[in-house]
Length: 598
Image (cartoon, rainbow, N blue to C red; front, side):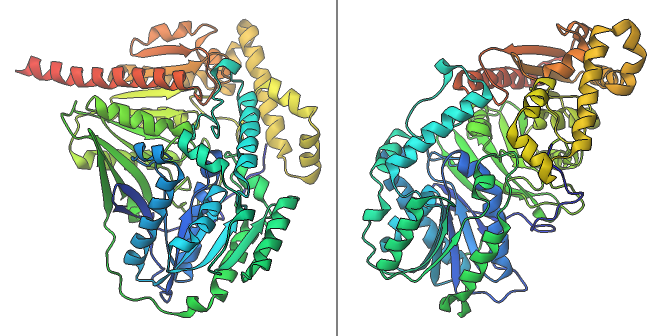
């Protein structure tokens, strides 16, 4: 168990979310220069990496944008076609040229919104490679920050394949359900044309005609990065190179997303050393709006800011045709942003829209593109404070006035927050939760199963982290004790029955379920077979869930051949069909109610 600081110490407290903007069929997030800072004549275009690395760096990019704003530098970030929240999936048939085309459009939009005449590209991974490859296409480009760039495309795709296998092994995904397409990872499929173009990338063979200033963050221990640095120096580039301290911690596990503070500071210092930084921007040619919409076929998506000080960011997905009179709110976990794990939230939202169901997917404070809130913990997994954000999202959906019935959807920690929010707020008509670890929280931090704790005891890395003080031993001890009591409560029920309310909060959980039943709130619970969340579920409702029979409003579904995150596509499709049925049933209930009154 990783130690958690008492409060959130990262940048961003008290800020508004970035301002959505639309350019062509694309949505961007524009962060204006800070009000108290002199507006610099340079602006930054942030270029995403791909796949798991994009998920891990989403919050990192938001923090970078906020730090740039503090020194008077505006920035813009966006999603490539076919990735994250982009609505333009068909353009990927053109491969990397489609991504490069959008980079040019985004640079033009950035200059119009900021008034800056000079642009800096900041990219990580494949985003860094695209930044250097696009250098000759952008006349206003003065500098490039390359953060662990992809140097050789073929090597990169092989590394992705290896990393993908490691992730699938860790998630326990069966070999026949794994996606082996080039570049695919963690349920995210790289478009084939893009993968084909990436194979041809070789930055060492790239001719650098104009000589922009370059900031290079090298991955520690990568000899190829050192060779590339030598090439840039030989080409006459004005280069500042540093070690990318914290690279592995940033990109290897989205659950932690450790922000490389030293790198951020070095990047800010480099930017301020550029001569153009001291210039002052002109008046912007375009003003950002409070929201931005794009449309494709039967779907319209609008990026929005809402809540106090516009601090929450979300995407409203609506049908352009008839409405079923139902809206869904789709929650993230603490590490997968509005797009969801393997773009699952995107897929779900757009499929709901095809049957007339609108939805809002959004980032809670401190997650993805929503800045944090003072006095909240840095680790927002299973944090009751998120319930307040769900209430704000519900208020926003109500303000739209387009639906009479509402459905709340969440997975993992999002499932816990969805359930607690439904109990706390009677406005929700239905709730669909996937793999909830618990229905009331009494662990310290994020617990593991007993099997997982036993494996970790024999793991040398765990011993090293324990010796270094990076493991909260008190939390681990408490959680193991609770897991042992769980086992005893299940196998020695006649003896342990009096202790159950004190240790597992079973009575309180059943009280919550009785409350939802009395309201007529529909609750669908999905578990993937073998998921560790079933350990607490069985304590509360019996080995086969037999105690759920007391609640006619509750349905239990078991999904085979899936992991905790619903990574395989068939599992995500089953979730989508179930969500459609539940949402449309709410709409039918509304129509039936109208018919009775008529």
